[in-house]
Length: 399
Image 1 (cartoon, rainbow, N blue to C red):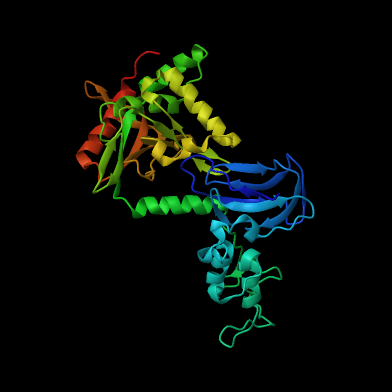
Image 2 (spheres, rainbow, N blue to C red; image 1 turned 45 degrees about the vertical axis):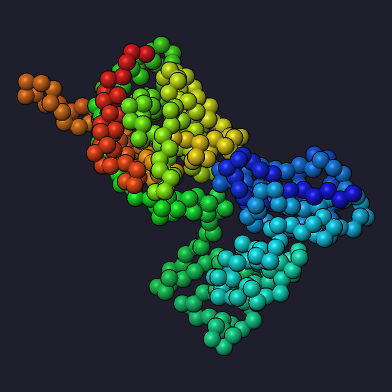
């Protein structure tokens, strides 16, 4: 009996995944434990293994397609068994609205080809990249490619239909690098954040002497506490006094959801891109417990084993993004909607400060950049919250 293999749901917040690799093609033999296909969300990568023995009798998508979760990806049946989309039900992703693969649609837009008018050669008559490339190679009187380009011309297509090189008109060559699937998803999220909120950033610095002294004490005691751990601890304490910032903006008609606890997210730089995992109930932790929890989720992100539910913006009530380790002195972080604010942490730099009796000296200060959604928070409240973070940093308790 044929078995339909669906796109798994990796976390409640994940609605679709990118099919990065189809390991078992149509006609390939399959044994339990074999990898059928690989896929990724905007943050994590996974492999789907076979739980049956047989042969792949149908594949409904191409590599690079964005597949809704729980949609049929392929069918595996007994050797010699006939199988079509009709025998297992029509996949939701192969409906009339999905007759053109995402990669084919993007290529068609680039070529100026009407993808909807093409006859697809893919599964179920789906239009795939090769169909678009074939249509583009048919010369048109208004869009003909010269077969003998001059020195200042570069062919639009290589033999493979790619775009390896381009010319900016001055004779200088450049390389066109397609966006990765993850980069596309991140780009969509960042654009949506800026397009759907009223973001404003305030900058302020805090005297870092107390924090640096506590860090030295911790190292002496054999405790690995970082500058980021201290800042995050100060942020959690400040959020307890400003519930309007520890919140989600749900829309003008619904209002603002304020959280009783602090669910702190931390931006983590990984080889796969920026990930923002959350530490739940951070307000119930000591600084040592918070430091351990932050390290654990960061390592899970770098290994690619983090729970996708911990990466959803809805899972956190506030986010911290620290670029201080890169020497950044000031930046404007982008809010992870529906959160109403995000703190950017900058590097420590010496700044002049009055030490008393008219004496001035250079004192280490850490830069803080708060971006907030003006729809949910007024400028005065945002400034007071930012100042409270600075005060918490400057008056950290003994370890």
